[in-house]
Amino acid sequence: MTETSMVELIPVVDLGGRPLSPCSPEKAQQNLEDGLATMERGILRLNYRPLGYRHVHRLVRRRDGLICAWCHQPGSTLEHVLPICWGGRTSLDNCVIACRSCNHSRNNALPSLFVSWTGMRPTHPVVLKILKHEAHALQTAEQSLKNRPLSSCISKEEAQIWVAYHQGDIERIRPNAPNPPFSRYRPQADPFMQVFVP
Image 1 (spheres, rainbow, N blue to C red):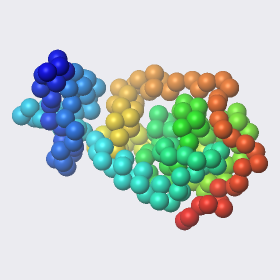
Image 2 (image 1 turned 120 degrees about the horizontal axis):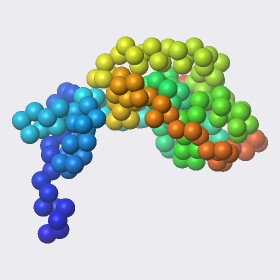
Image 3 (image 1 turned 90 degrees about the vertical axis):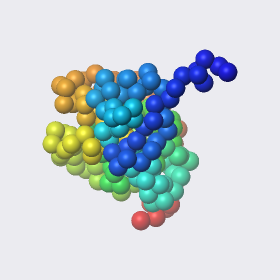
Image 4 (image 1 turned 180 degrees about the horizontal axis):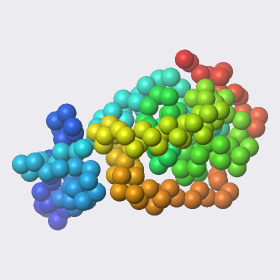
């Protein structure tokens, strides 16, 4: 038996009491210290709803297929058009499918900045709507982040942002984006609307 298999794992449940994968005592302690969970009778109870993330990912994938909303190449990751660290939610009106290179190269940059860096011409309706009203979307997102409860978060990242914001430490989770960002974008790519299924 290995040393790690001898460590007793901590049972984990979500807000609704649904069991999740157990975690190590160290991971449980970190969740407790970060304010993301409470411990009740030896069970780690998360203060957010992580299973909701999977549901949104499935809905976005069904809507968009497996095409990156930025570079129009094959993609599979869930991308927040208005990044979570700026108050963006994991919801149908803020999420699109993206390839890994576009998703990671943004590094939490606002969509207008990412478009200006890369020269992309996005055609996805969700991206276009947020680009058109980015200042208003930012203001609305911050107000939502300020007023909504931690239990409204549907991923660990969203919950970490919520906690950091309410502790007045939001700047540490808004890293600078790389310069120049990497992307597979090619100007001659087919527009997204040819494959978009509403």
